Image (cartoon, rainbow, N blue to C red; front, side, top):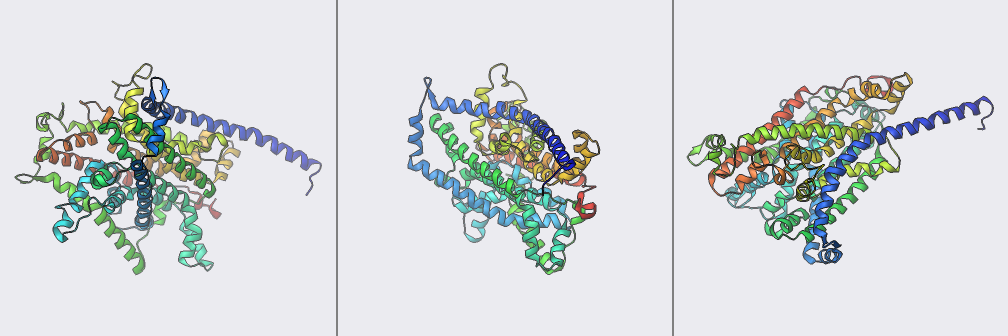
Length: 576
């Protein structure tokens, strides 16, 4: 149709108004990006570049020949291959086991649900050395399987894969289930009314809506298992090594910084490629969704099939999650003279640590809580700004930003920790004596969780609601407060809980920068495990149990007091 007269004037006027509005939106996104970009540039990019430069530069010249030599080494190629395929296998296995759990926690209502939902997150924050020890007690020589059936899985890849599922089960349940519980079930019911089978309705309606969350969960699981360290080192023995294990060996044991730097760059490049692919695929799957109060979507199981699914998920949680945690608690109470609180009482004084600590080991609890609270505040500010900038599709300047935010999860914690010591030791960034050094390092790991938790929900908010608020004269801040905040408050608290939990359990970078007089719980556990003797081992298990209970308590409180979504778009006719 050809426009003429007043219609042409109206079209031109609309286009003229759209251009400054688009430029204004782009300017707002760039302003939101400024703080996260500066944060990651100073506290991630600069330290990593400093340690890599220290390893690959000698006398002012780059040792590029060392990179070729390292990458053609057959042993290194074997490490690269094992790292990639075990990460892929761990991701597939975790999704297969955890997706039914995500559905059960999102759609079913049953006694003890809140407690179990908090408990399944606990393994994610436990130090890997502790989890490795617990799995050895189950799967290794003299463990439960060995005692009962003479069957062992230690030093096999199956032990590594099971430990990875143990760690990452909560990632899928919380990331996918957090969105699943807010999807309006009436959309799937409408498809069934129109003749679709239950599976066809789920595949055509629910699965496309969940695809961004499933992709985000798979990405995080792959990154965590690709950079796996403690579980592989303890359960795999000398036969298996990931890139992270090899970087640690080259750095701490062989003092070969050039080889470690090359491997760090390889790991960095591989993670960057995966993140770029994920960012591209997510943009192709995004769509606005109708979100409702999670309390309206959960109901008691109906029929034998749903009850069997609930029973199966509870059995998986009992065997995969609760059994190793039970072993951990039992070992913290198994004193030489019989079960009791001997190891816990020994934590109250520095003398009981046998010279391992300058202060009472129990002070590590207070230190960890302070550091985690500060790290959570930093991660929320940086993560929410970044997620808000990424909410709408943007131009080329923002296309790699999403992937950039995830890079700390795929970079060697050894590299980051050493980089902090090397790079942040001169004015104006001389932070070696500052207590902020630890929460800054922990926040680097917390920010990706905030972004990945907030982004699917923010992008699911119907854009027309924001536009309606703008038409009614609401400025951007008020529109966000009135439209977005009521829908994302629960996701914001879930993000805060995740950031707090991972900060409590962060070990890789913290072990290099925590001061001797202010140890964190994971650092204290590692120090006890590094010393021989039943008392040291028992105190390590006692501190690990305290860490587990702190995490479970925080997450349980979050589940209980998190506000429910009100005024969701689906409350109005047509889902708008």
